[in-house]
Amino acid sequence: MLDTFYPQPVAHVSETVQRFLGCRETDAARWQRIKNLEGSGRQRRGRSRDAAGRRGGKVVATSLAQTHPELSREAYLKLHPISHRKVKPRNRSDRAIRSAAQVAWTTKGRSTLKSSRTPAGPRLKGSVLEVSSVDKFPKMTNYVVPAGVRIAHTARVRLGAYLGEGTTVMHEGFINFNAGTAGPG
Image 1: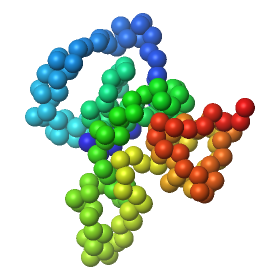
Image 2: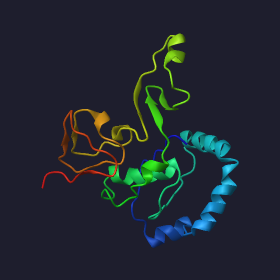
Image 3: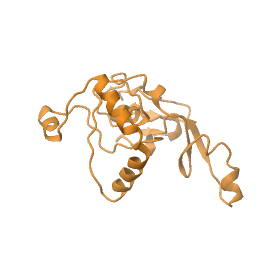
């Protein structure tokens, strides 16, 4: 899994909503068994879930509580609420970056480093593949643009950055994941 988009993350879910969604906590051993069971069909199900999403498919609620993410999609779930201003930075796992895959972020979408090691392939076919960055996390503005902020160079702000209203990030500024600004006092 190279990338996951959570358009409307919620930081704190009430017990009523949890009961309605059928949420329940699980221990690490049970979670490992679930992951082992899903491993064999993960790619097939992932493709069908992606297709369902494009056709207006199911809504899925995922909760990680205060766990340390072990998969890229879990790392993204930890970072989206920060960029959406649902939680403050440093309230989510610092270890998220260790679990995310290194990705080439290109004009044609995300790509593993193996498949984009050289832009020669697309050039031979008459097109240009521009690699905007090679990093574990993309620029935040590909996912969310918080209201009331100015960002002079969007590649300088990572997904998982917290930008308070009124924040200006100039060309040489940089805000990494799990960091940010509260905005003017």
